[in-house]
Length: 165
Length: 173
Image (cartoon, each protein chain N blue to C red):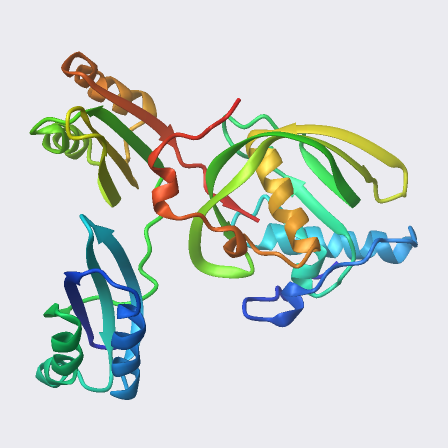
């Protein structure tokens, strides 16, 4: 396994759209192991997406289980993930391994239904909420060439509590 | 370390102020750091970190013509510190209530007693002249638990002020 270099803003490769994974082989598993080791080596990241290390394939890893008071499903490797249904929205503060020394507020859906494949190619369906759903949307954005700074909301947007349940 | 000057500009708001002022600063060889521009009560206000190029008394001279043209008052302060000194908030406090004197003092005194460091504060008066409503949003860092903070702020409800406290769960992804 290896810790891979993380691309940082303003690297243009972060703006590139990633392609679906077609080959579920040992090379994919090896890459996923490296990607996860890279996530763990960083400053407490709850997720990472393949394009953050310059590999433009639709792969992301989430693990929000270390967060207190967060309902999470543990360590998830999601290949070719898609949002099937979403509900609600809330403002939360985000930062990114690819955008050091900056955090900001972003609006995300609060509940998700997802479909994806596991690292072996088997179909997976999942439901997520709250912090874990936020983390998923942050990582999914990477697969579409978007960073959280593309979605920052004005501080004044936050004057009213706009959580919709 | 770079020497920074905090530039404050206040004047009647109109389109193009930021563009004109920052072009003048750029042509004087200045770099810009962190900035916060807000329209407050119809006024243009900006706080802008400036370094390099013409600083100090020279900066006042550089800005004088554009400030005169745009009707801006200029204030310059040499400041300590610099970039990359962010503190991340862990608590957000939202306040709303019928506008009256003392709301900000009432809330922030309690926060200060809890060791709460305010990192951002914004407030506005909503409603109308007959029934003004004061709304304030504070983000900051507090070493106490959310429960302690809520308990300490609970006395405000009796004084007609609604206060909502929530954790800021920073997500790094």
